[in-house]
Length: 312
Image 1: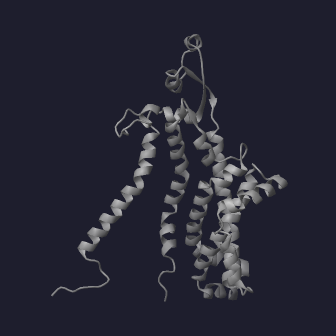
Image 2: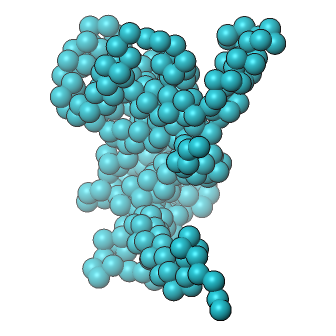
C-alpha cells in the first residue's frame, strides 16, 4: 500500500507548476528578447509592419548610440574614404562620424548615482535598523510608520518643492544632489527590510560577544553584520533597481552634468524621428549592470525573500 504525504506534491502538481513557471518566464522575457533583437535591426526593419522576427543583423543601432554624425556632400565623402567599419555603416546615409555621443557620460552618471545612493542607503539603513531592533526607542512604532510613509508619496507630489530647494542650495544637476535624493527615498525601504532581518538574529550572540569583551560596535560589526549579509544583499538589489530606473526626478533635476541614462535614451534622434535600434541598444546596455548585480547576489536574494518565514 503506497504512502501518501500532504507535504509532498504529486507528479501532476509538479508538472502543472513547472508548466506555469516556464510559461510565465517566457512571457516576461519576450519583451526583453524583442528589445535585444531590435538593437541589431536596421531602422527600416525596426518599424516594419508586420514586425520582422527574421532579419539581417547590423550594428547600426550601436554605432548610432555611441557616435554623433553629420551629413556631408558627395565631394567630401569621395575625398575622405571610410576609416573603419563604423564609417562604412553611416556612409550609406551620406554621413560621417564626428565624435562620440553623450551616452557614455550618461551611463557613467547612472553608475555613480545608482551605486552611490545604494551604498549610502544600506549604510544608514543598517545602522538605523539595528538601533530600532536592539534598543528601546520611545514611539518606535510611530517613527517606523513615519519613515515608511515617506515611501508612499508619489514623486510628483514633492517634485516642485524639491526643485526649488535644490536650486536654492545649488544641488541641481549635481551627482551629490541626486545621490542624496535617492538615498532619502530608499532609506525608508532599507530600514524596514533590514530591521526584519536583524530581528531574526538572536540577541544571545551579541550578549556572548559582549561577555567575551567585545564593545557594542565590535559585536555589531563582527557578529550581526555577517549574519545580516543576506538581508543587506537583498535590500541592496531593491534600492539599486529604484535608483537605476528612476526617471521623474532625473528629468526634473538634471540636464547636462549629472543627467542619467533613463532621460537621455528617449532623446536619441535618427533620420525622420526616433532611432529605434539605437534606443533598443541603449536599453539593452542599460539593463546589464542591474542584471549582473542581481545574478551575482541571486542566492542572497532568494534566501532574503524567505528569511524568517519559518519560526520556532
